[in-house]
Image 1: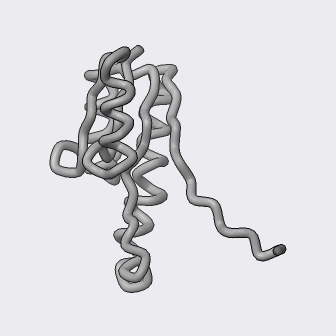
Image 2: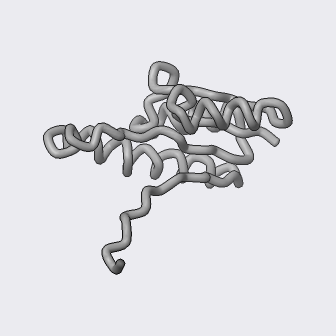
Length: 107
């Protein structure tokens, strides 16, 4: 299976690369190789590699800075995954995206 890992330099991405790399053809990339907020760049990479699955491990995780860098956080955490989904869906693949769960307040 061909798997593209976006955000491979973070903890989840690097662990996924280790686990999946032995049995699958991988394209593991990070921001310096692909800006997931740029739709045309994402489409070009996805078209060239034709992954069956994109595992999105990219995220803007500096929680305190998200309050002051709202546009950057939105672009990385919303627009980026949207671009990945649109691109891989165009070629029949799937996006796996980890979403954060809010802690339950009903304790």
